[in-house]
Amino acid sequence: MKIAVCVKRVPDTETRIKIGVDGKSIDEAGVKFILNPYDEFAVEEALRLKEKAGNGEVVVYALGSDASQETIRTTLAMGADRGVLLKTDTPSADPLPAARALAAELKSGAYDLILFGKFAIDDYHQAVGPMVAELLDLPCVTAIGHLEVNGGSAVAEREVEGGIEVVELSLPAVLSADKGLNEPRYPALKGIMAAKKKPLEVKAVTLDAGGVTLLELALPPARKEGRIVGEGPDAVTALIQALRSEAKAI
Image 1 (tube, one colour):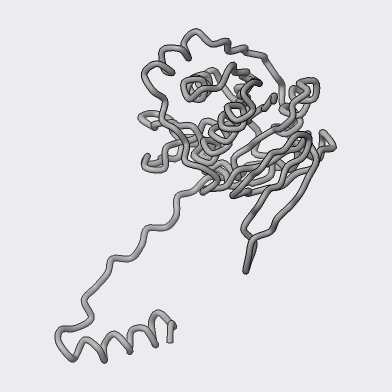
Image 2 (image 1 turned 60 degrees about the horizontal axis):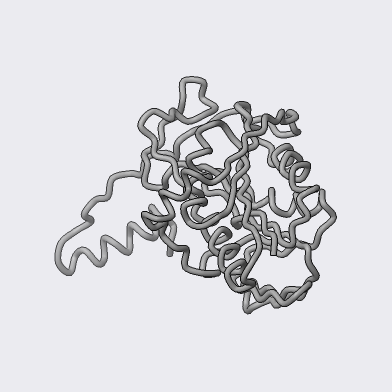
């Protein structure tokens, strides 16, 4: 089984973000970057499918600057066979140019499955995977929480409002992984050492401008400081009054 996994380098969720001087990007000084958490589920699922089949190849793709090589190496340490960096130093705010670049690269790969994370935690687009599927004319199921592959077909499950949706589809296909699909493995020392010798190809790509323009980045407004509305039994009346007149909650 030949599987492609598309991943992204994103800021750690625990990192304090500062807006850059241009007002349209983040200041990367001191920022820790990680493999997008949802992409970890996609990588792990690809590795499990390969192990279950007993043969095959897991190829990891990333679109970004040279710094994304470190992200790819993380997936190689987990067990992926090789990586491909589609190098660009001019990222687009529009997910469509990214999807076009990935689709153009994946088109000739003859992959049985193409996996994505549900979304990247830095933009929440949840669009690149379905766009790639549309560009490649492949079936697509997003945000899957369970997957069974049998020969040339698969059954995927995804949570929907009020229940579980079960989808049967033929391969090749594009899927995006949700939390709960599996438990991603931690790279062992042996895998980390082996990753240094695994092939990582760098290909320069040029993204088109797309139809979305990023105008400004801004941090959320600071929360108001809390206050003590009263003490003892009197606090109940004061709290109810504040909820009614100030918060408009009741």
